[in-house]
Amino acid sequence: MTNGIDKKALFKLKSEPYLKPISDLGVGFYNLDENTAILRFQLSNTKGPLLIHENNLTAYAYFESSNGSASDVIELEIEDSNNGIVAITLNKEFLQASTSTKVKGQVYIGVNNVDGNPEYNEVAVFREFTFEVADALINKISSFTKIEYIRMFDQLKMRIEQKVKDIEEAIANGADYVAEMKSVLQEGIETLNAIVTEGKSDVQQYITQAKTDLTKVKDDATEDITTTANNAKTSVQDTASTAVNSINSKTTEATDHVDAKVTEFNQTVDNNGFLTPDKLTEDLATLNWQKKKLTNEDGGYETISLDSDVDKLHSMEGGLYYFTSVPITDASSTAGYAQVETRTGVSNIKRITFKPYNSNQIWVKRLYNTWNDWERIDTPQTDTGWVPFQLINGAVANTAFKTETDKGFDCAYRIEKRGNVTEKSIRINASKVSHSQQIAQLPENFVKSVQFHYVRVPINQGYGLVGVFPSGAVYVYIESDKRDGWDTTSQSYYFYGEFNWKE
Image (cartoon, rainbow, N blue to C red; front, side):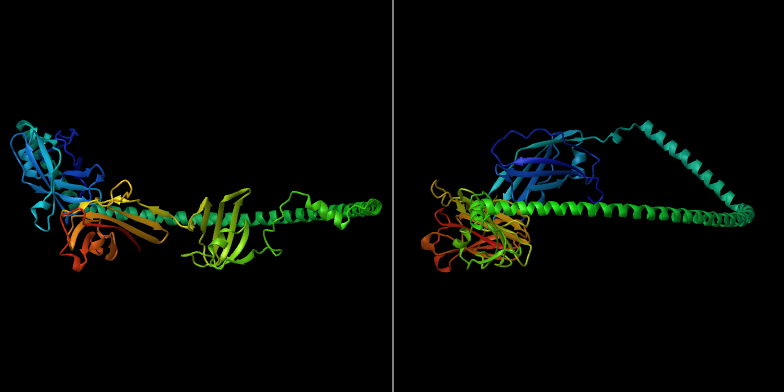
């Protein structure tokens, strides 16, 4: 409703074989509700909300009052196909016919059988639910009260008419009011002019006095600043002379001390043989200090060509480098800055960080027992995980390769976003299908443009082709020379495979 006053009640219905009605949720409407009494239902099964679409399912509802009143079989509107939500607005006439009763309702869904084959017919009946229809309070006002309201409104009408008459008489005398208002206006103008004239005079006096005061303050401040500056100059000169004399004295003392220490040092070297080149090298070698040079003498990184050799990359020692011909794909360049991080005494842990010189990309390669692929870490990533979907039109889902050893996957789709790149994937595991049959309905615009991909079928049946369309429809196609031998009723004739693409 565009006016926003609709009253919505939500029932959650599951497709399961239990006859007990769902709990009374206390839902109720009134017999004067019009286009505002809305029931919404979320249809689900044990795996979660049903994926519904007008192309593959039709939902109906039927209502019956305890007084015998009943509705037609009404088709429900699909509000959210991804979350299985349908809705209906209760008819005003049905609400009035069901006044002061409890109403039972039930929802039904049926699979659209595009082939018209009876064995593909599927109908699911959900649990019963209840709600009440109450008599609006206004309907219970007594006749006496209604008469009192009529008399009250009649008296109000008379008072309004008298007010209108008084206003009309006042308007007729409007000329006198206008003359009086003009007189008041003229007096006001004359008073304002007098106030403005007096105000201008006062302001001018304030300005003249302020100029005189500022001039005096400036002269006094100038005299004070001059006196302070002269005093400061004399003090600085005296301090500087004292400091120079002190520095000269200290310099003489320091020079004498250094000369004495140099003489003493030379005597020590000559007498004891300390600090000879060989002795100095030997002492440095025994010290525990960082001996690896992280950068060149000018601060730049060492440049190394990896020749696109991944083993050469993996064997690099810890440090900072500028690599060329890095074995990497999807990066903006194979040349750039790199940091190799290792752990002392451990050979199965290592991390390599690579930054192409011509972009702000950051890629990481990690070793923990085995090396993983390059990962880009400077862009946000999202992943829906595998979302299961149902098959329609008689197709049977998830029967191929479902042994303990094969561990075949189920029908599902997935959306992964890495920065500006979106990758979508679909898994198909379907049997009992025929050529050019729609087997599933995915959300609309799941693909931007139609996608066709090959999947596995039984080895002696060639190949299978799957088409996914922007409408969300998924179709299967059998190789032309294998269609005559294809068994549409056997689970041994399957379509199985996973495919993906980037958008």
